[in-house]
View (cartoon, rainbow, N blue to C red):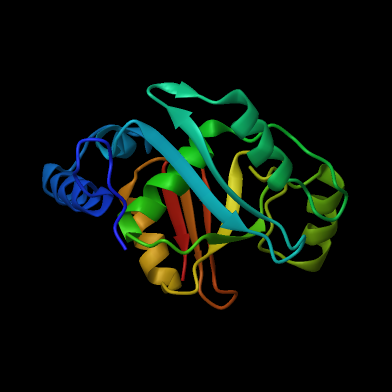
Length: 189
């Protein structure tokens, strides 16, 4: 099923044309929002959380403006599920997630494994694993660990890398990709 915009052009056609342009143009801008500029006048994020059993499917940006209530809803959805604490989620991270999802051309929602982490949760995870950063961007509301059932870790990783919007980590053994709005960098196997 193909969604149509007001002009009668399919969303899929717009995304294909935009993805082809983005790949051949080799953009020099460093923000995922640049990838979203040609994608129409709305930005939408769709996620599920296996931890809370919740889902979110919301338009968070229309015609150049973030929708404050939608961003608050995303912030609550991406809360630390262990402590139920929230922290403002950086809209740049949401944009990176959305841009990568659009490049993958899927309707399936992301599975959010980790969004915001309280300092206490991050410290606990650090005690259990060497792979958890002491000053994790999760603590700042600037990171998400995501999975898509219909796409491999490598596919999601490559889509996020193409955005040139921040940090991208590939965690193949744990079956997820980390995306953040920090400096552009990549890691993992």
